[in-house]
Image (tube, rainbow, N blue to C red; front, side):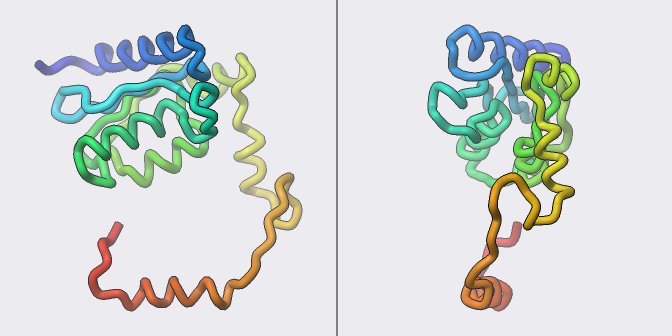
Length: 158
């Protein structure tokens, strides 16, 4: 049965409410749809799983990819209760869905103390000046793996 965008967005919002009321994590939910059918749905599980990457979008991307046996969601649409954070934004681009619909925006999230601006700001800072210490090491050894990948004939491109 095919539904419209509002139906799926309302389901993402319901998932956010469910997760919040279950004290699973923050008030965020998401749904992934393919051909008018929900493939995966979920909510933020950061605090209930002690996993800082268990944002709603990450949860449903993992689930949908597993169910569809693929690492790309090119024929799918993601509905999320809030504009994705930088991590989820990156994961969405790697998953390559055809569209993303979102409810709240990052200003709405900031108003309830979910502010990701510091991450956007850190991306613009020189590596040596970042709040978390980053130190490059053993590049010559690590680059050998990249060189091997570049010449590998049987790799799966992505």
